[in-house]
Image (tube, rainbow, N blue to C red; front, side, top):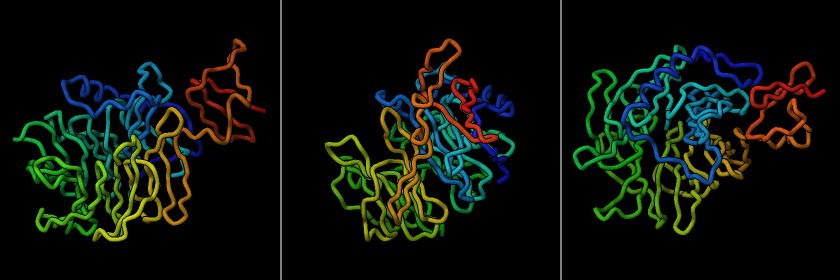
Length: 348
C-alpha cells in the first residue's frame, strides 16, 4: 500500500480528493437509507475503526453534526496508529470501513456498498438497494459480505462475488466475519423466532455446523472479529440497564471469555497484541488503542491531554480567545505550530 505519510499532521484537505467530494455529494443526495443518526449528546463522533493489514493505518468514520464546520467534516478517514497523521478519504456518509486483505482497497457503505482504491482514490459502487451495511472482505479477496435490511424477502446477510458481481443471500444473521483460514465464519444472531438477545455464533464457511459461542444473558452480543492468527475472537456486548457497551475476548471455540474494556466497534491489530475501538470521552466519542496484555489505553483522536489551549493563551486577532472545538499541533524548527480554524499561530 503506497500511502504517502506526512512528516507532521496538517489540517488541510488535499486537492486530490475534490473529485471524490463531487461524487459522494451526488451519491448521498439520492434517496438512500443511511446509518443510524449518532446520539445527539455527543458533539462529535469517531467510530467503526478498522486496522490496515500492514498495521500502519486505521480507517474510521467521523461524524460532525455541524455541516458548516470544515475543520473536521463528516467522512471516511484514515489515521496512523500513533494518532498523528490523519487523511480524509471520502466526504460525507461513508460508514463501516473494512480493508481488503492486500491493503489496497477499502470497502464502505452509505446505505449502498462502495469500494475505494487507496492509491488512485477511484470509487466503484457495488449495490444500489439503499439498505446495505457492515461490509466485510473475505480472506481470499474474492467476496464481500454485508447486511441488508428490509422485508423478509431481502433481510439478512448477503455475499457479493467480486469476480461475477452476483449477489446472493447467505443467511438470516448479521455482521459476518470470515476466519483468516477461510474455513469458518463468526456472526451475530438470535437463536429463536422471538428475537431474543443476540449471541455470537461459529459456523463453517458454507454456513453449516452452527455453534453458539456466547451463552450470556446480555442484551446483545455483536460485531465479532477474528484475530489474524485465527485463535481468538473479540466482540462487543451490550448489557441491560446501562447505555455503555463493553468489549470482550474469547478463544475461537468460545472458551476463556473475559472483559477487556468499555467500548464498542473493536478491531484487531495485525500482530494481535492490541485492539482499537471507540469510547466516550467527555462530549465526544474518540478512538482508543488498548494493549491486551497490559490493559494500557491510548487515545488517538481528540487527544488534548498534552497541551491545553486555554493554558497556552491562544488568541484571535481581536484579542479574544477562540472557542476551541479542536486543535492540533506539531513540532517544527523547535516551535509548536497550532492550527485552529485554519489559522496558524506560532508559540515561541
